[in-house]
Length: 101
Image 1 (cartoon, rainbow, N blue to C red):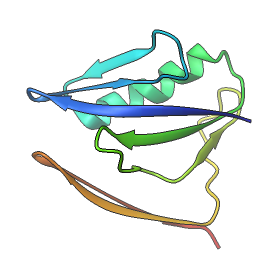
Image 2 (spheres, rainbow, N blue to C red):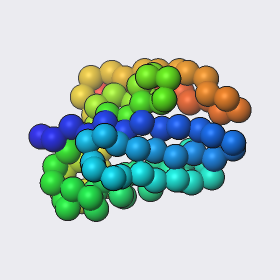
Image 3 (cartoon, helix red, strand yellow):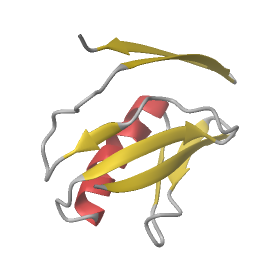
Image 4 (cartoon, one colour):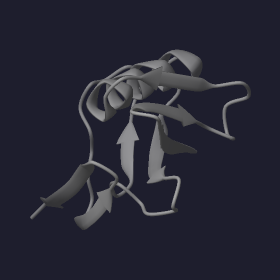
């Protein structure tokens, strides 16, 4: 399964993302949640339904979420194991915890 790294950046009150794994891919939005939705949809479109794993991180290098696999346009994330991270970003805070039994 193809792994695609996406890096999120914040500048002057807005957010943007890039991926070195997808030639020329960038996305931008006013909020992190809007940007993340654009990234999920944009990467799905870019890879044309090819199953993939998103590796999301902040510009600082902090991983946002554990590995999540996506299969051909499905909106269901498959998580394995336990993922937990809490990090501060200027004027925002991201805290994620997921556990699959």
